[in-house]
Image 1 (cartoon, rainbow, N blue to C red):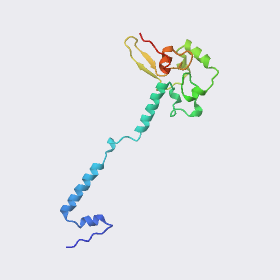
Image 2 (image 1 turned 180 degrees about the vertical axis):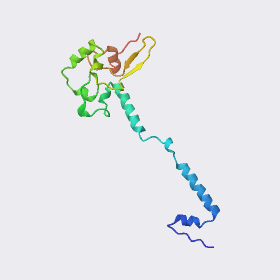
Image 3 (image 1 turned 180 degrees about the horizontal axis):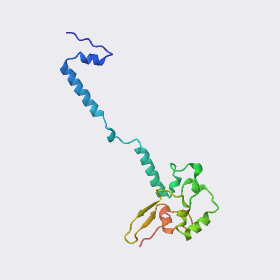
Image 4 (image 1 turned 45 degrees about the vertical axis):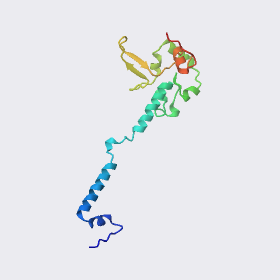
Amino acid sequence: MKITFFMDDITHNISLLPKDIQKKIYIMCWRNYWRRYVPVMARVPSWYNRKVKIENMIYGARLNNIHFLHLSFNTLEENKTWIMGCQCRYCKKIKYKYKRKYYNKLSEDKGMFLKIMPQSEGNYNQETYIDYKMPLVIQYYYDPLCGSPYEEYNKWAVRTNKEEIVFI
């Protein structure tokens, strides 16, 4: 018996083979398929790279004392306003004539900064933690006095690394 194969039709060609060879081809095809198959739950989600990028931006903002409202994914460039202590490019280049007045008020009243900032449900610039000596303490990742003449000396020395601090 002579078998003639056609170049275009693979299903017809396989059907011409004996049954035991057809079964082996079937098993081999499914094995190769499951080797290459990655289930949906095992794949990296499509949003993961963006999440990592945003987390890195938030970490860099905390490190460089950039206010959360001035991150690129949060506010358009034309809607930005000067925020005291912010070290972003926009706030550094702006010449605001009432800066000294705001810094004087803030040095007298520490709660003034929270009063002038817009309210939001999630505040990314502060973290609340519990200390046994003081029941509720708010630690700020953002320092509104950063870069001003009223900034604490130790914070300035650590941030700029220009002075050597002696710890006792």
